[in-house]
Length: 276
Image (tube, rainbow, N blue to C red):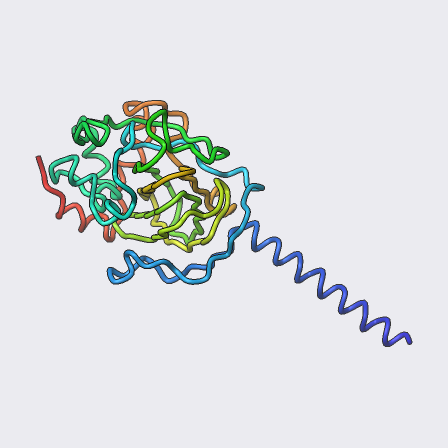
């Protein structure tokens, strides 16, 4: 009997430890998508194995972004625009989605005053800091049309070292994410709620500044764009915009970060950017 009790106790302890480890892993953002960035053949392929997680318990959802101060409108639905580069179209080739997700491209927005979209698509947009309420299922409307809209948001992530991170996007509906000139995420569907996540994506951050560009193309119904990282990343890195409320404040805020450009793909992509 004593031996049986010891065996039962050991089993219970093992179950408790496994459960606690599982909770800890989830709290840290356990990745179910690895091996990025995406290869070109997979740029518009939905990853397998959605997790359908409710992340409403996280308090690290990001609310401040830098980018066009209004949406691209009247798209006719995501299928009409997701393969089009609206940044390229709006800047006459001075910037692209890829180059905008690099330090060199981001800095060009200092002198490119606006994105010159057609009046039928919202008209010219200025670069600015804007806020999205992570609790809202319609946060990307921004006082404009609710359907057939497209939004771009930029973050600068200052990492003290090269590190592996996990990002958890929520969106409605079609989403794409580039980091440091490479595409890391594509998902053509909505995630089910403003804080619902289908994929926790393992990414690589370089020491110093990393530029993330997030794009969501919405058709009808809810319209939201949200993102958070694993707990360790939020405890380790600095994410901008932070206190900034406009373009000038944003660049003052990241001035020290931009002065040191990480080596690697960021520097090679700069050669592809069309200079004024």
